[in-house]
Image (cartoon, rainbow, N blue to C red; front, side, top):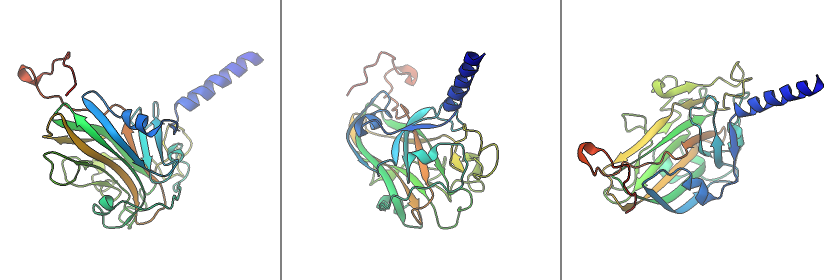
Length: 275
């Protein structure tokens, strides 16, 4: 009977772990960014400007997040995203500066920025990727001057200046605390508890952040095939450096619609994705 009890306990523990968000920071920066890329894209010149511990991989299978795995960028620490949501104020204060491009999107200065930049050559004429933005600022600090923000900037041939494509769907509004919440663009908001109420604060399938967006998709079209574009993914605290926010970027979701090469805009599955 003792052996049976030990086996049962082990199985329960394994199930518990599989239901909880997991994070890791073991990949080097190039491999980490490469993990985001799908077919038709070539990534180069990777630059990461994030504090240690503020970025890495995430694995969200069997959690309430809505994405299976990918890259997590935070304004504090990746470990603070792990559930259950048993506090409403998880934070790592890195003491790092903000980002000027993000400052221009919101009404307050940013701090503790985490930024990834790289060049990308695409075989197609568009680019898209999937992401979720979450934060401990929800909901008590909505419209209170602490407007944490995420953006995905792109520049290059055919684009005037630098364009942010991480927007509230159907708008030109950036994804930030004050712009996506329970009262503004609420269709895209998911309540995840306050840190003090069940089941969010006891069940490990719930991540730590008090709220987050549904899976969103950033899209840009009318690119020039086989051209090189510069991309910048950035997240930062707005208004102060307290309370973590994070953006979950889905692995393999950086994709490009190949230029149509057959009738009906159907891409030949045997097409060689090379420029």
